[in-house]
Length: 434
Image (cartoon, rainbow, N blue to C red; front, side, top):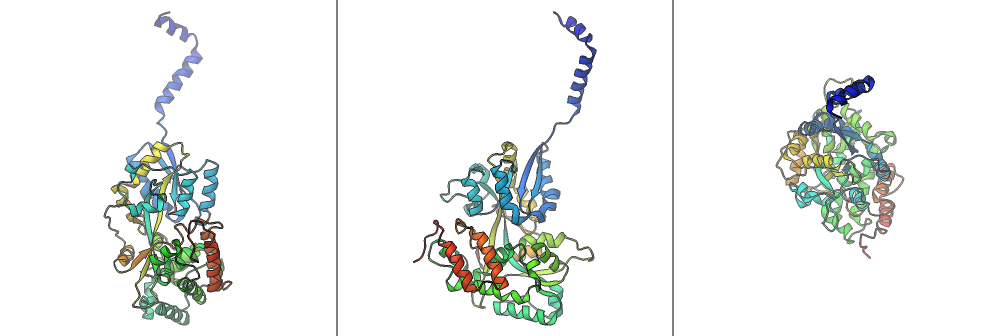
């Protein structure tokens, strides 16, 4: 049979020919579908910046790939991510908490080891929070760090003749003066979400009591106990804040505290640099102008003491080991290590500082000031993030509950110290001081 007879035969089947012709036309007319990557995160406050600036910059370089940013409520992120990973329906890309939390996912084979070539623009210190104890495997690209501090309302400070405190005594004198003379709440802090008492205040102000990194290392090496005086003093600092909080602070979430400060109904807001973009770009319905705020570091106990700053590796991003889109996901991870991303990130997320080797300046004055603290102060990371969380019940969760109880007066500082020390003694990764 020659080609002409084939054509003649097909013409005797008009419906089949029409269907085939239409199918071919539709195939050539349809644009190719872009591959979609799902990015898991706990940073709901940053959704706008990822969707409007960061992701479009990546997609412009890789037009065949779309990235969908899917943030969870921060306090629900870990549990929901664990469930999705177990059910193999988690996203392709995973926001990684530092040290123990991400290490746990890697040990479960839920995060993939990353090739060294992908990490050339990060030093060993940047990679450490997402590297195995033996240093052999890194499983998340280091992305950003954040710094703890206290935001203050510049207008109210000027009206009252206040200046940022240089010691903890001055800090509490400042709180007392605000409470006595103003209708605004002295300190925007609640306990409905629970995490702020630990991740902001206890680990932000606490280093001044336990000698920062020296005290943290002493706990990990079994040379210190939570019942030692420095740690008990940190819990006392927490308890002493109670008179300056909102009357119903048990019902106040972190979002409520953000709004309370942004609407100028509170004078101070203990937080971290991660809240800078929120304060810069969130419009309050009934206000024309955003709050004019400054920042100061948690002050030392005494003027002659070395100041301490918590400069925490906030998040990395890793590859879901079960992702069906590994090749595309690796392109995204490679982009995270580029100068392009390192340059764009501090412009979009002005409160996060790049962990890459590139020398990138931040254009935000508050961010610049917080970065400058490292020139005069010793720096550390959150107390329990490395090794101390490798215990059941989780040290992180127990600190959340314990510190909320201290703020509410349900546990004394000494009781809190004794309870947390008992948890710590169950940790087989930590040698115990006799």
